[in-house]
Length: 613
Image (cartoon, rainbow, N blue to C red; front, side, top):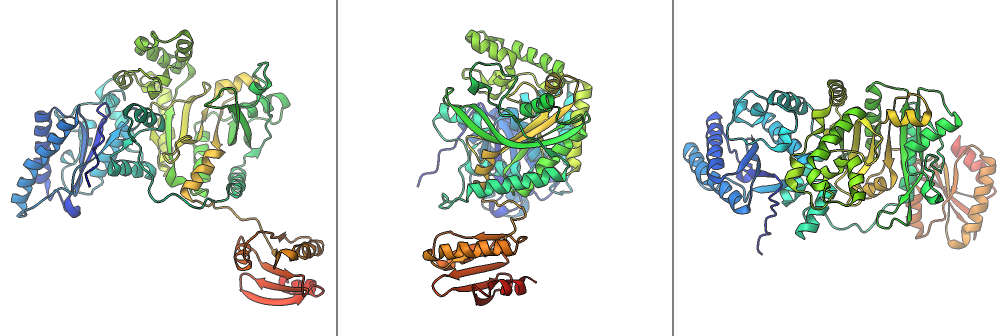
């Protein structure tokens, strides 16, 4: 069977992994590390490969580089093998192969994942615990200004960190202090194993449309034959949300269905499309609460269909808003609250937290002016409607969603960090440092921007690579200016919203069951045959009248009696009653002790009093 043709998107930097055969050591001491780094320098000079970062682990080598074609990369890899393997074999008295098969590779979307991958390989090398001088373990000392490696080529994503070297080194030192999330590490390893592209969903879809080949990792395992009850999961999701919100002293608020700020003549266009807007309007119009306040909500929202703008689409949100809190601590509280809810839903391994700082409205406006100037050649060729739309939010071009935007123009675009004041940078540093201390993995993505224009300062999203259509399951941030405009006075405000439908889809993929206390079921009544249903309902009514404080349920599910008894015995059921109208016989099962007994209808009440006492 022929080998699969290697995927190489030349405009994307490549993450390369070389592994020791059978996990054999590739480096025994510092001399091996020095020799390999020297060969790496020679390989870059001979091939013209632009090497951005490297990490040497005891049995693995990671390289982050850019190349113009497959042949150059192949010759680069072959040269490393031809010069290092003979040296290693001679020095350590061995023979045979050193590498485990071909090198593994993955394309990296530079705006969102280049610095994360650089951090991934440098941290792994530094954490390997070797006694070798760190300058020969990875490129981290060079990026921190502790050592100079002249064969490294700075990538535009690295240059966009700050205007000068000292600023980049300081920003990167802070960046390295934040732990990498397990979800991101799993994505990197999956992309390397499957030779796919590490990028967000929109970039992957654009690449697949242009190249006509799949670039995303393929899911493992066979397709599922059974899916959980989505309604039951939805009920549990609301129960988890209520427990978490009330535990943090958030009060539930009811939202209006109409968006009063929208004055369109079409009633459908006035339906509420965002929970934050509805929450602020309810406060402003009904004077529902005094500030400061913590509020949460759940309910339906409406938007135009993404494929047909004439159709309405209903979706659901579970969100929270905190008003009257100006300090960054409230943002940390909400991020930890989101983390707790995802943890209770057992979805943490499937999501990753990404954060960006938008600065103040004035700083964001200055950044947008720089972007308009940078993308002026692209904007000039658009129709007036598109020009007006992109003039107000040119950051959309950074995501590569507009066809015809050169990749080089996106990669060399100015970064928002260069436009932020020291106060905004300190605020972001306080938040990320607090998240690190709390043990919440996250990544700072300077190309992360909201779809709605009212955010300022911090903005974040919980994203998943497991869903194709809806990769964002939660988003939130600070929106002081919009809150002040709607309420009518200065009000610091921040909040977040979970998208319910993507959460349900993700739960099906993860096969998760939320950690929530089940609804109490003291007694479950099961008809032995279909003609016993009326008798079972009569028994249920009699028990509810007699035992007013017990939870009595009639189980009318279908299937064999044994299967129905197994299902009914779950969810904390204390007593299972199987009733038969033919002989007026009732069988009682004490579920916890698995003790069975029987009685007639007339003696059932006294029997249950004895068992429940």
